Image (cartoon, rainbow, N blue to C red):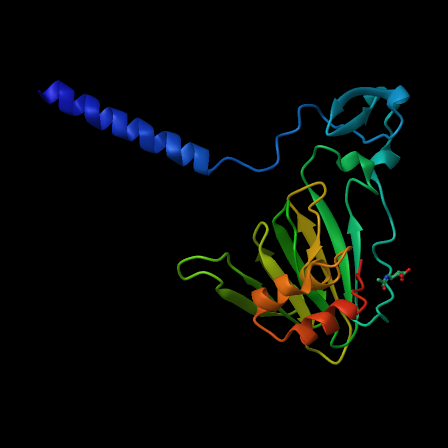
Length: 230
Ligand SMILES: *[C@@H]1O[C@H](CO)[C@@H](O)[C@H](O)[C@H]1NC(C)=O
């Protein structure tokens, strides 16, 4: 009898351990080799892992190098912000490594509008200025909670995987921040652009009911030019 009880506890313990292990598994796979520099021409490629990889013997320091992130970007667009992304598309050596970054410039009162990264968590680090930053949690019980923070130089804020987030420069001066991502290419969905600026347009009946507003407002929004800041 006691042995059966013990066996039961053992099985429950093992099941809980298995659950804990599956909950802590990472999103990006661990690299299978030192590096895999992305290359477009299959003729000079060795093997496939997401993108073609350059023969490691042909790789050089420049495959892992990019400069110019110290240069302030032009923020004279309607949003007053400019995102310079550094990912596998312009830094080929990032391929399979599961990280990337961006520089974000803000004009006074500039906005990086609500958006999500479908493939990565973001670490946001302020170098200059004062930013009001926030993210909203998923739907569900007690869902759609807003987490915000006023950020000053040296402050770090985390935008968890896939959640809608934004940053607004609340200062009279420009602001500069850097972001790092847990993906070689985190992707970007700007909410307003995707919903009101899709090509072709979403049937206005869908958005009228979804947003519970007048159809004219939806049609007005769909007529706007939804610019990207990156
Ligand atoms: C961002 O800045 C660069 C360089 O300053 C400029 O060429 C680019 O057009 C700007 N992008 C936007 C969306 O304003």
